[in-house]
Image 1 (cartoon, rainbow, N blue to C red):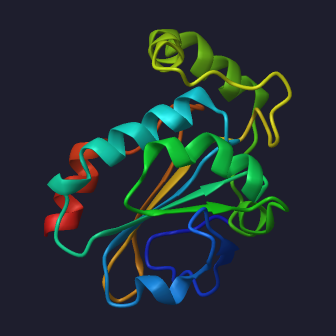
Image 2 (image 1 turned 90 degrees about the vertical axis):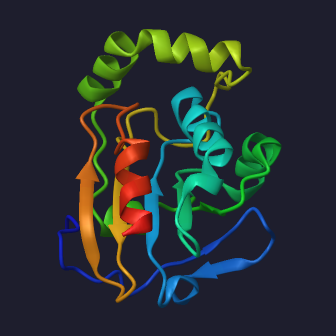
Length: 178
């Protein structure tokens, strides 16, 4: 079932790169951005994590971010620990929540993303975000960004148009501060 505005994410329990399990209770009383990403070595995903990490201090006080990847935890640590991200990075190796929340897989949107955003792919690869030859996760996963209010309700959900598409940072920043 696709997530919609007004929904409540009632369950989320996954291992994190911090070495402890994350539960949805971590977000209680806080605004948050929860994002479903592709696989751990995805250049687009790592570039987005890098950009969010660099600009994290621009977000509102107490704002939380959660990045959920379609990868095993050990593989995820290998690729994301270099970011030293100040937010949760989680592994959903079995796609439990990807399936529960109808995160789309689309080969067409994968091709679209790598074609129309080829410049972004090259930029990511120049920064060292090179995908592994055999990724642990799906190439065709399409990101989903979810903004959750302090009451735990979804205030905005964005099902991306392609593999590199996300809510703008300005949209996230404005939400975090208001």
